[in-house]
Image: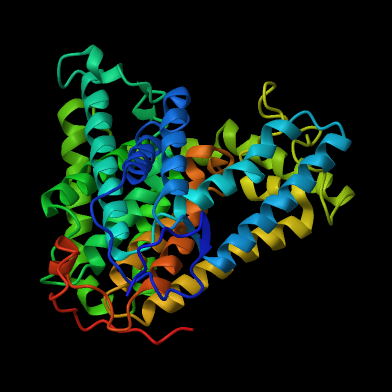
Length: 457
């Protein structure tokens, strides 16, 4: 029986002897964390002054929650070790007088610890369900507001100040058969679109969705429309890869996906043509023109120059790199932030060297593999883990040519495996709660489904 004595401020989940009690209503800290996540998805990189007090409430709620902050012991050691390594690289950069040493230091030292504390609140299946709901609602908001902006700017609906009232870095150009628009939320779609596609493909039949299924369908259709209209190769690539990755992570999908993939492709293509035909002078070669201009324009040449300069700079200090905030001569992308590069992983190699790439890559890859392996052992947990892991994989792919992980709003995705492992650690021996029990977590008489797990020490 669980003790009523308040737990310590800091605890670990290596031995979950008193942790099988399901959570009740969301706490203030959990509400703040959900609002913060929605803000990071819907308005990334903007409104940071508004996010700061929400972040403070979320952290305070996590620290003062009953039982204290319950870290996964291994995960906490890894994150704190990487934060210490990041501190060393920040000092290395300062020693080399790198102009961006301080600016980059928070990403590698402070924010990982912050997200470790926030991620510690995800301990039960019910928490994953709330996480799913926030992601789905965030996707619906992005799809609706992005569509409103595009339709108002192209004259399909009357222009309205509402379409630009929220700062999402909106911009749109249509000339010579090319439609190009920019929204800061496109970075969120690198995770959300694969997440939604995999959710629909993998969710068990007869099991209620985490939220109304029509909200999920609207979220998927509206965000896919934004992906197609954006013409961004990274988004189009992860859109195409999502079903393949879903099958790779969940082999039981092979028969089911054959029935679903064709309708999805047909709906996407038909929707693309209809949307364009409604408000654009449709040209037969529009998609090819967009892709060709993206792959052969000035951006491609700039990236080639960046690659050569970054590799040359790395060769001078291959083990520990130049330190955080270093600048590679001949590859300055922005005079205000000359240490920021589009080729994110090559820039990481330049800044922290082979030692850093091995440490960061090993931490992400190791936690991903363990989360996937352990969730596969539990029938009933994999439908929660596979959509999140596919979304994480696609986000990491999109980050190859865009440094999204250098920003606070995107770092949370790296903690998805840790959240899944925390939930796995706390599962009771009888398995994953049924869908009915998730709705009524305090009903002790409710049965569990057929999910099971191996006993853990």
